[in-house]
Length: 215
Image (cartoon, rainbow, N blue to C red; front, side, top):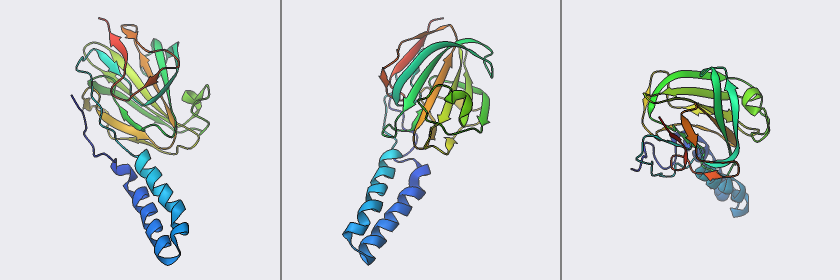
């Protein structure tokens, strides 16, 4: 099933794209083509960054899909004390500025927890950013398991976007937000989820299976 519930360019980027495009046209008209080059490149970058590539969501509802494009930086055991309140497995995915930055929910379910935390803006690939940086977490529950997904801002990111709220019912692989300009995403899962990725793997949002519910 192809799940595309927003246009190819997400609306959050429209103002930046339009602004850069207008500057490009004005610079080209009133100055010269060379003056239009930099804002023209910036326009293309914004179009590229705010893209929403179509993805094929696995039909298997027991499969947890990657919430973001990027590289798996860690798979580790931690104690999650904000929502799940138990020892969990955590998958950390780093998004470079060249990855698509829309986020999709790993499993179908209902949002039972949502928390936004202000913080610093240190590089998203460094240890500890999940505790120090700006972040937004949602807890998703269904009849089989309970997980938490956290969007974490990076050194360039200054805004975490969420299109969902507490109590919303989400479809498998549904778009739910994005992080602007470099970021990290963490997924916390209970012990009834078998992890299927490892450090160093590159995952695709909504398509790569990062775990399976085993009960």
